Length: 362
Ligand code: UDP
Image (cartoon, protein in one colour):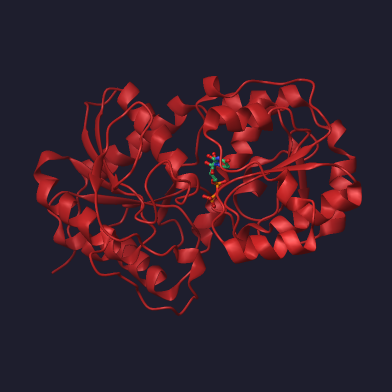
C-alpha cells in the first residue's frame, strides 16, 4: 500500500451532501471517502452548509447554491451568484491548501478548473457528467493541456463526449455491498430511481409500464416541479407511485423487491449509480443503450439494453426480464463494483498526480 496521503475533497456546490440535489456524486463522494479512509488516508471534505456525511465529518461552507449545469444551455455563459458557495468553497481550499497533498474537485463547474493553475497544491478533477456546455468544455480542455493526468471520469463513454482522446482516467464507481440486501423473489413492480428532471426521461418508464400493465415504483429527488406536474397530468397514476427521496437503507428495501430497474436517460448518463445499487440487490437493469448503463448491463444476464428513446423496446425487454439471473446481478456488483477496488483506482490516480505535479509552461 502506498504511503498515506492528506486529501481534501471539495464537494458539488449545487446542494448539501445528503440532500439529493447533487445526484450520484453524493454517493460517489461518500464511497470514495470511506474506501480511502479504510486504506489509511486522511480525507477532509468541504461541502455546502447543511451537509451530512454518513460516518464522517464535513467542513460546512455557507453561500448561495450553484444552478445545476444540466439546466443550462450549451452556450450559457458561466453563472456565479453573489456570495457564491462555490467561490467560498474554493476560498477555503486555497487558504488551507498547505495542509494537504492533493485537492480533489467534485464540482462540475467552471471556477475550479480555471483556478487550477493558481494553486500550489495540485488539484485533480473528478468530472461527474458528460459535455454539456461550451464554457465547461473549454475549461476542461485547458486543464487537460496544462496539467495532463489531472482529469478523472466515471466511464469511457462519458469521457469521449469531451473529444479529448485519453485525457481522462476512467475510474468507474462502486457500492458498499453490505448496505444492500439480496432478494431472490421479487414482487410484480418495476422501479425507477433518480432525480425527477427532464434529462432522466421518466415519462418513457411511465408509458412503458402502463402499456405492459405492471406497477412502477418511483423514488428520487423532485428536482423540477413543473416537469413532475406535467407527468402527473399525463399519467394519473404517477403521483400514487411516487415514494419520495429515500435514504439508502430504505431505498434498497423497496428496490430489492422489484422485478427490474428501468433507466431511461435522454442524455449521455455519465455512470448511473442507481444501476449498481439495483445489481447489488439482485435486480436486473433495463436501460437505454446510452452512456454509463451501456457499459454496466450484460444483456440477457444482468438486464437488457434497449434502443435509446424506444418505448416499445422497453415494453419488449420488460416481457423478457425473467430470462435474467438475479444471482448473476449480485455477483456482478460484487466483482466489478467493490468499494476497495474503487479506492485502489482512485489511490493510483492520486499517487500519479501527487508525484507528477506538472506546472504549466510560463
Ligand atoms: N437516490 C437516493 N434516494 C432515492 C433515489 C435516489 O438516495 O430515493 C440516489 C441514488 O442512490 C443515487 C443518486 O440518487 O446515488 C442518483 O444518482 P445517479 O448516478 O443514478 O444519477 P445522477 O443524479 O448523478 O444523474
